[in-house]
Length: 508
Image 1 (cartoon, rainbow, N blue to C red):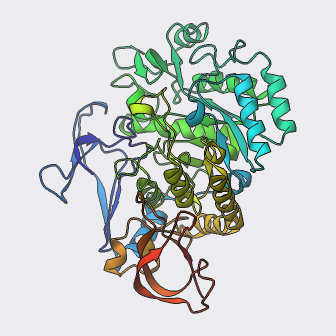
Image 2 (cartoon, rainbow, N blue to C red; image 1 turned 90 degrees about the vertical axis):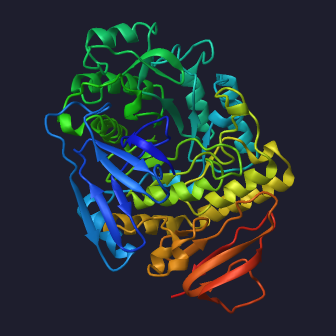
Image 3 (cartoon, helix red, strand yellow; image 1 turned 135 degrees about the vertical axis):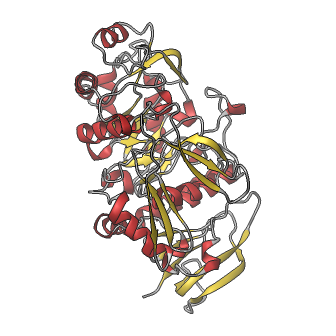
């Protein structure tokens, strides 16, 4: 990971939706930087394995007369003890967990499969396919391009002529219905834009300007979630949508990089602009309950809601592809965000990187993606198993059911996160914290402290090497032996054809 004096706040261009000022080393040493320091990060820039923390009077931070870089250093016997201290001292623990139905059963989203090409007929046909193929659901999410214009918070009646009727029919089929929401209003989206502008509901910079751009609007403005009046107006618009039968919402964006620079927000100046992200997610959690999802975080680890990963690309590489499902999971957990919502199974399928073009994942990456996801807190489908063949449907049903089978273990891990500060999905060194070999493993993960998952994340691979930390490990995939593996040890060339997910249960 390379950064050249990057402002360390939630930032979209760098895919840094979560930026906790916390670094943990394998030696049991951590650094925690005060949230009020105007922090810039220089990492692996001048030389490899080099980290420089810089405080500067520079955008996107407000000017201050006195610049301070305040930080704490913790030194402990190993990284596990160090991290638990950081959780209890700085990061905090979640106060609850997301809605159980979202954990147990898949979320189905229109986004990856349909992009912005959604209508009432498309959404209902999607639901009928899910039912016909006998897959469970927690909720069906209507994603991008349902509004009359971006920011109106009103359904396009050409595309959705009877939204209330649609929602009721979906409920009759067993679906809760959720809706994609963003914090922007495009200029020309009336009367919403003029109303918000007249009442000072938008974020302004120090020149009094509101203009910014985002991926669906080159001239837009952002609602100011540090302004209580703006929050009340914005929340009331969403309440009106709920009167149509909408259960809850998928909230997008929230990074400080979407604000006109330098933003002039309400609240302590030394906490800006990170304060915007924090206030945004706290408003959402306070008003819309435990079934929401967000994609950003800044000093908000205590919230009992899902934080989803930034969009993943449909590829096998370590550049935002399938392998990074694991590394992102581990990073989020070690930053205190343990209620992780993985991105959609198979990735987003962007055609040549285009937001509105679609290229379906291959059968192989779709199945391997699902397997990688199984022991994470939730499953999220958009591309479907029946987009492929009967074998894919059977394999995907098997692993969707496996996730359901182990949901009680996920719930137990969440309880331990709430009460003890233990990550829901820690790295494997968590149960062998002074094992230098375990420190190197970035393609396996744990669920709680007794299930180890080692998915296949390489194209055309039907075997892999697996490292087991100390302990006795049962292999549910081996029907011919009751003898557990004893770690620490490597399992070389462990067979894992397309229908096999390697995972192991630690015996007491």
